[in-house]
Every structure is written in C-alpha cells, then in structure tokens.
Length: 115
Length: 115
Image (tube, rainbow over all chains, first blue to last red; front, side):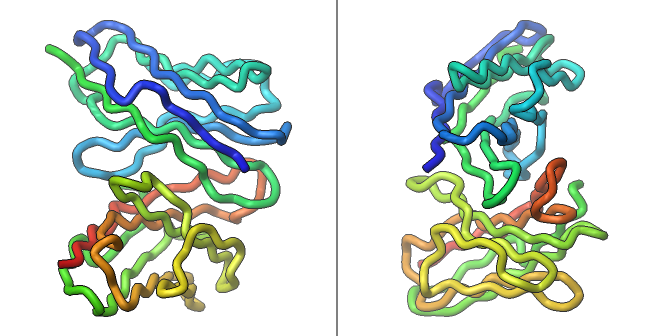
C-alpha cells in the first residue's frame, strides 16, 4: 500500500524568507503523481503544485517549487518570499496515474508566517 | 472558488441519526470523490463515482453509502451516526477520473458534528 509521510507537524518562517516542507512516500509503482495541497483556516483544499513522476524537471508555480527525488522517494515543497497569506496546513499527496484514482495524503504540516 | 459546491456547510445532529451530504461537481467534470478529514484519521478517501457508476471504494463504513445522479451531482448518506463520525467531509471532482492529467478540485466541505 502507498503511504505518505510528512515528518514536520509544524514549521514557521519569517515573512519574505524561504521555507521548505518535507514529504516522503512509499510506493512500488513507477508511474504516479505527487501533489501539494494547501488548507487555509477557511478549510478549503487548494491545489498548490503537481509533479508527474515520469518528468525529471521539478515543477514550479510562481513562488512555489518542488524538489522531486524519485530514487529517494522524496518530494519537498519550497516557498520563496513567504507571505502572510501562505499560512495554512500543507498536505502532500500521492496518486497513481492509472488504476485507483484516490489521493493518499500525508498528515500535514502547519506553516506559520511571522511578520 | 474551485467550482465544486457542497451543501450544507455545517450539520449538527445526534447519535443514531441519518444525514445526507450533497455535492455538485465542476461543470464538465464526470467524476466525484468523497473524502473524510478527522483529527485522528487525517484525510481519507471514501469512494469515487464516475458518470453515475461506482469506480473505487476506500475506507468507507457499511453505514455510509453514496450515489451519483444523472445530472452528475452526488450524495453521501451517513446513517446510524456515532460520535466518531464527526468530521469534515470533502467532495472533489475531476474531468474523467482516470486519465493522465486529471486533477481533483475540492469543494469547501461539510462539517458534521454528531452530539
């Protein structure tokens, strides 16, 4: 069974600084997707970034980028120039490309932005 | 706004009761997913429907059932409610539920409190 682990329950960063959230996963599959979702206090789940496992290039979305290390089964999220609106729970998630389409989530990391 | 709507936003009921949660997917999306977010279990996949047919089942209790109607909206029925069923229930939708670039977009959730 696939599992996703986020080892940092909480993180904090100064506004305008850079922070990296960690995620590791366990799978025997070779084709899959990885995601980072953000859950602000409103509780809405918002997609931040997506990475296809067959792509070697790391995904980037504006201030958000990932460091995808397939052999190490590691998928970290880097947030540059942190803003107060980035404060939220961040969930790492895994999904097979074919077959079961369910998202498997990690436990989440609560990110606090200090002004 | 993801385009996925869920009603009601909040639901308070008593143990032993039955409730129905409703979800309308994004326009054009054929697949609907239900997830449960609780403090002790985290975010867990419950069930997926694609164009009216059940596609995949996760950790869904026998007391829970779901369906997707011809207009593609979905309902999650929870019966014989227990205190432990208190959680945030998310609906997500995607275009096909199976193709490579499918991304799941989440609704705002229904918060269920069982007293």
